[in-house]
Image 1 (cartoon, rainbow, N blue to C red):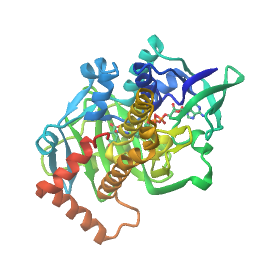
Image 2: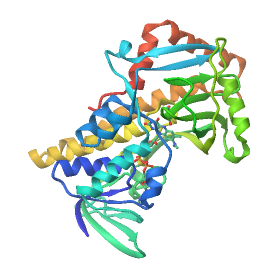
Image 3: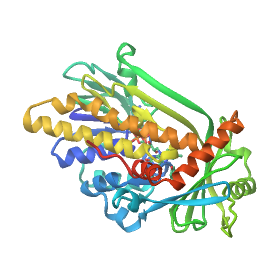
Image 4: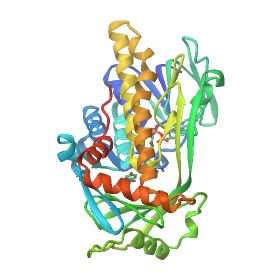
Length: 391
Ligand code: RFL
Ligand code: PHB
């Protein structure tokens, strides 16, 4: 098999990239190790930044998003039994975000791709990227029980944190930057209308909690739990009781309970691999970087990376200059590090470390009070949450 761009992974990064390239008249093949139902049902992100919304619309994947997605003009910070709303449009000159699940973004992109796009092979596992530093990089993969080779002009590793693409970059040119956190998130889906019409980020002495949603009738909620927690250790009643405690306020706000349909635990990590390019192999999305979910940045960063790559390759084809392709890693990393910084700030602002001291508790409350009382501090949060432009 031969193609111009070999794409490994059909998460949001790989699927959107295939779409952007086909719109630019560049052919590609997507290899995805899992089957279609798995990719379409994997519960993950929920928040799309304005820039992501615009890109999905331009790629022809905005129709259902515009119909079913929920526009959110703010979030609530909850601490010390009080509530503070951050008003995004007022602070950012009109920007907002949208609640539209990653599962739905993937379903929309897969349907488009299978209808009139380039080949998208499910249950096709990439085994290795070879000859990345030559003009003819190759992906060895296994599909329907047979090993095969995809010969490419470029390979883009969109295969997530556990993928194989990053391994093809020699250790001698790689640098990694990492931080793991001594806690994770227990996430649930529940068949109950969200108890608030915007997301609620709660700081509590017992740990962080987040109220989010998937639709007007489905809630998505998270609890900070110790690292290594097994979701099955928590009964449904215990989960609701703990959520109630952490969201409790002095007014008459109430958390509605409902049947829990899914629960799982996500570890928390910050990670960056530099550079994001080696020869003709490019890394995009979680294959290159991970942020803790507190800032809702992971999917949006993945979108930024593939937009940058598609733009650079299109420019090279039109002008003959590889300037933008050569700048790919540096261009992406500027945005990535801003998202790392913000996600780290939000995580340390709202979570309680197991060894937190009373001094650190007071500092967290002072940081929250500062956001609630200073337009400058609040604007900083609103600008970062609604998104950094892709340059
Ligand atoms: P993905 O989605 O992990 O997709 C990678 C794909 O590659 C496939 N794959 C392979 N295919 C072929 N051969 C191989 N050898 C392969 N190895 C792997 C995998 O099967 C998979 O299909 O990476 P991508 O596309 O870079 O997308 C990144 C996002 O998924 C991720 O950053 C977000 O989900 C992070 N995230 C959030 N991001 C946001 O922007 N807003 C949010 O609100 C948000 N909330 C979250 C999140 C992530 C969470 N978890 C579970 C980590 C909430 C949670 C709980
Ligand atoms: C989600 O709805 O899954 C979600 C929302 C905001 C976050 C993380 C996850 O910061």
